[in-house]
Length: 195
Image 1: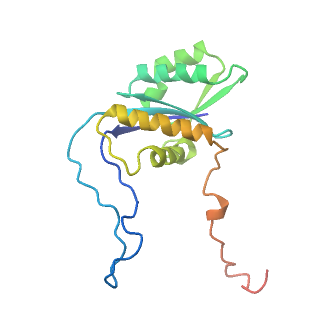
Image 2: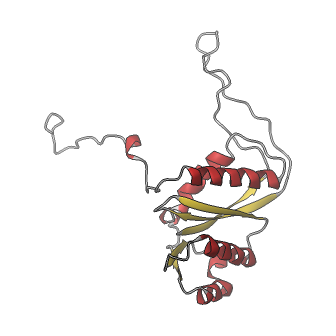
């Protein structure tokens, strides 16, 4: 299981890629226009989204918090403990090296729940935690192309996107999907006509 936090996320406008005019303008040579977005100057509420992700099943759990503290992290771990079925005997939690993840309270949590084992990824190796690319998917589902006035709206969008993801979940594959991979060239040693 991969655990991490996303944020800080703010109640603001998030860029999208929706086209305003799908066809080029009548004037020759003028490309299609993308949606314009008003500049967002306001400082509104912000917070963090804590997440748990099971790559084997694709199932995810997200919870919003207003601050990134050890108390909130322990509260989230307790929610994950309730979320994971009791039939699972061992939980390997993959985490980054944030000080909050290595706090004494987390050690006490691990002593209280012996089925948990925390595995810390190497420093500067965020790509080893599969929740990181999933955060990109969640941002695309929940935030992309939308404007939020309050933190509660952001939390609601994240919650609805997580429910949608869990309804359509699939095992998460590390790297790009095969249909998006480009065919490799034959290289120097093999002639192009020999296969």
